[in-house]
Length: 160
Image (tube, rainbow, N blue to C red):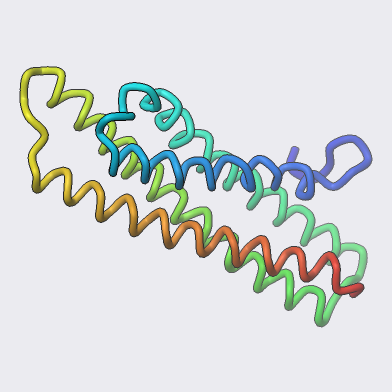
C-alpha cells in the first residue's frame, strides 16, 4: 500500500500531506494554547489537525521505508543508503514528536472544553502547563520537520 501510487513511488506524494498538516498542527496548537479569544473558532480544526498530523507523519514514514527497501532491492548502496538512513532518523523523530504534540493538543482542548463550559474557570497553572508543553512540543516538532525535509531534499537534489 505504501510502496507505489500508480507508477510513482508513494513517498514523494504522501510527504506533501505531512509537509502541510504538521506545520498547521504546530501553528494551530500554539495559537489555541496562547489565545483564549480564538479557541471557539479554531477548536474543531485543531482537533482535526491533532489527528491528521500524526497520521500523515506515519504515512510518510511507512512510504519512506518502502522506498528505501525498493532502492536496496534495486542494488542501491553506500552513500545514498547512509543519507536515507539519516533522513529516516529525523523522520522517526518527527513522527514521535508529532504524536506527542497531537496527544498534548487533544489534552489541552479536551480539558478546556470540559472545564470552562461546565462553569469552571481555567486554572492559571493548567493554562501555563498547557502553553509551555504545547509551545515546547511545537518547537521541537517544527525542528524535526525541517531537518527531515532538508535532508530529504538534499538527497533528491544532490544528484546521487
